[in-house]
Image 1 (cartoon, rainbow, N blue to C red):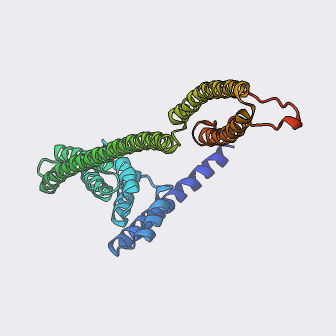
Image 2 (image 1 turned 180 degrees about the horizontal axis):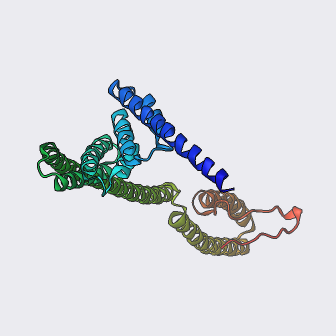
Image 3 (image 1 turned 180 degrees about the vertical axis):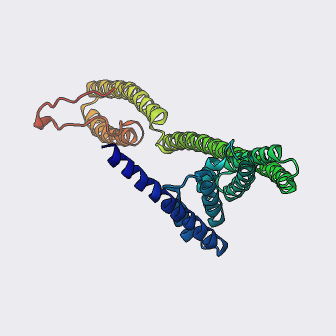
Length: 320
């Protein structure tokens, strides 16, 4: 049993150098592809080598460098961070330097879309350069790059400030425009209400003017008709009184003539007869003249209706 275990151990030990040699060969091939700028092929070989290599930090560094060259800065940052190791100070210094480059490139790529993330990446970039200088104070490239990134960081901050001011100004303009629109809408509503009120007043005034005009154009039947009626009634009241006086005078004249006729009959029959005939003729002529005068001047007009005796009595309404 022990012999069997020993044989297996020897077999495994014999295979390990072959496997390690194969991984180193993949790394060397990947490095050659890296030099030829064949980033995808180099990345594939680095990833295969990572599965069984003992120097994983070195392969991580190479893989991070390949992703950086390809422009995949997030993947580059991920693998370069894994390359940092306390056991290998020189490798950690190089990893920090390249992390500074990767963060800087990432920040510039986000400048136009996400300026806040861009500023954060540049801040991390300066931190990585500072770390690289702490591991190697003579690294002039790290010092130079840090100064460049610091200027770019200030530029992005100013740009953000300008964008914020423009955004605030735009928002203020939008608010002002909205306020003006609301004020104008309010004014328009008030103006429409005023126009409506004025129109209502004008319509009411027009109706009142029309009513007054109609009243002015109506016949003055009220007072004029009443006055005419009063005059007619007054005239009707005065006419019967005048008629009665004329009738009384006529009776007196007839009685006087009759008395004179009687007196003449007593003195001389012939003379009386002639006188009677003359009186009768005179009476007829006088009566005719009196009647014509009465009809022309004193008779009521359109008030009394004379009825012949043979037609019988007829009731006449009095209208005075």
